[in-house]
Length: 571
Image (tube, rainbow, N blue to C red; front, side, top):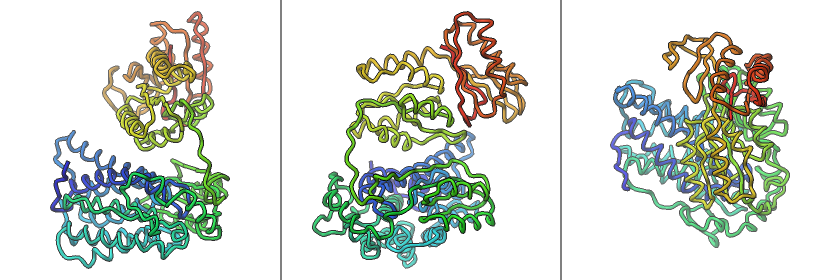
């Protein structure tokens, strides 16, 4: 379907650009992953850029939906630009995604400078691209030429010399970035030896191509991804396995580059969001710079995204604790067998026949699900996973058949989108619409990989459907509920998603909820305790079941930081 070009850079243009950029990165993701050799050849640059863009696009959509719900018209340019930047910041993945988040933040600083402006023109876009390139370069501890930073600067330079509307400026930026990308192998030895252009820069060119399409309706021409003329290919080709001529060519090049930047580096990638002031972040930069490399700290106004490669992951996290409040911590071990530490291609792993991928609300349940053989996706309170994260988990499960358990009613559509994407990649995916982690536990308990896929899915679906679920939580504000008006601080008991009990004590409210659930019968009670649950609540409820309900068993798990004080399942 042809794209209707936008005349000015307004909120709708931000929305359109985010959507088109996500689509462009989705098409190019595997190609970008395949040429990822710097700073670490871990084959995830395209995926990280896609997940970062997805978070940005989702944040912009949320702003539009909020305005529609309140009949307040469309958002301002500042509303949409800030949402884009914030979404990218909290969803940034890897070195490349973190830099992309800062590029978008730099643009937003210009686009949102006047909070009431409805739109900007070509001059505003030129200034935004300049600020984006400059702020991204400042965020990187040790900028290296031949990377996405070089491509961003070239785009801003080219845009600065363009006169005209947003379409003209966007086209100039794209052309400048494309030319700079083609020159990256001559600036960075590891790229030249591998015969590829910079992966992060290639991703930025895709994003700028989407900007051109936003303002002109035209899709720019394909982008070369391989610098070796003998094996020259362009993005858009379907044979991604031969992008670099052959896997052996790339492996040999990496072996030759054993002493070059980006190889033989630290063992861990550490990423976290951080709430801290500017002074504390300045000290944090200095400390992390001494611990490792590939340091990128982006953000501002009290919220930062920190990315670093280190050998001592614990020290990197401790530095964040000293600076402020780190959360959404991700630590990735590159592994002794990864190409960046051995200079050799990892041997292909035969896919399993079947796997289970499940979203879980706390670290304790993540461990429980993993012990049961599932691939868990951790959803921290207020931070639901995006569809791209679920797709990555399905790929990570490395199976021909996958059962997907969203374990949250609000994630059903996200999980459905992830399942559809995985199916296009040849993976057979069945989505069981579990609405709570306790329903997922019930489904996982009857999972048998040796059964026929359809039979296994039916049995797991039946077990989940036969499990009633509840949660005990604390109200954050006054609100109308099915059980009446609650005040901030009240203890709420929700059964099957609706508030059924309002109380002042966790144990008493939990008992009232449990009694209501068991009044309809049941054979097994599952209790999942959050970190904030009173120490005695599990013993109290177990005693209640033992004394009042015959032939009903109780099992207790520790869920960790799961949002709810207590999860209850009855089956």
